Amino acid sequence: MTSAQHSVCVYCGSRDGADPAYAAAADATGQMLAAQGWRLVYGAGDVGLMGRVARATQSAGGVTFGV
Image (tube, rainbow, N blue to C red):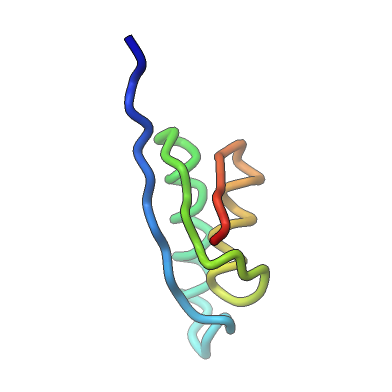
């Protein structure tokens, strides 16, 4: 029997935004996804908040899928 993999799709800005809390939340989201073993599906951007979520996920050992 195989277990289903959970995926979470994230769509967010190509900039970090004016409030540093946005960048911190993006980093925390990526770390949380990796810790839960969930795959991140995202727009394949490597800048801004979307890039932060992806890099944080990858850095924490998580799986990403860029579309």
